[in-house]
Amino acid sequence: MPSFDVVSKVDWHEIDNALNQSTRELTQRFDFKDTNTTIVLKDEAFLVESADDHKLKAAVEVLEGKLAKRKVPLGALEHGAIEPASGGRARQIIKVRSGIETDTARAVVKAIKDAKFRVQAAIQADVVRVSGKKRDDLQEVIAALRERKFAQPLQFENYRD
Image (cartoon, rainbow, N blue to C red; front, side, top):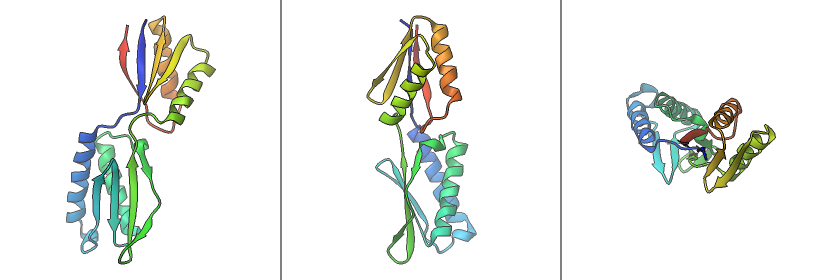
């Protein structure tokens, strides 16, 4: 029976490369001189710290620009609130979501069932497995899911006949 998986993954190697490019740019830019702005990747989350809110937002913008150039979906980022840090500084935690969260997985299954496709969708940990009798049905499901916007970016893999 043909099937495919709906996943939400990020390329951690590309995230690391974007982080390195961002830190290099922040050290070289004149407007970040003497602000001691840092971006650190720790426990699948970025920790951005800077002298004030404006510099912090500019640093996050640089990071997002580098991630977008490396084709990392920005929808996988979950921005936390800007918090005051010690010494009058500002800090923000940006989580990187990988794997489909339960709510998004339920929304994907509901979208498939509401469209009345002749396929079965099952949530398996952080993957939604979609199977059906015809390949054409599966291709229609992929097209329909690409048109809709979900809380996370989706990829389709393990397409099997």
